[in-house]
Length: 107
Image (cartoon, rainbow, N blue to C red; front, side, top):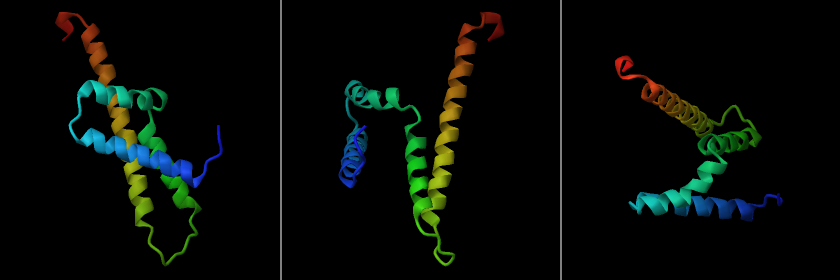
């Protein structure tokens, strides 16, 4: 893996920003899914990973008791929210899969 540089991070950030803007423009669902699929297949926990990266970055900043770090607190809350949302979706899918396998009387 090549070394990380500010330019590679900028390029990744720019690519994600362009993807988010594209997805907000009501694109063709097939094309949108084709664009997002590699992200989801390779990194299903992407929101959590991005939150972890921002949280780790906040931890490298010098701590000053007089400076409020609301951004770090908001990122931690968002990270927890994304994780819970992901887990709820997994649980919902598992429940639906079990229900679909049940016989008619069990439903």
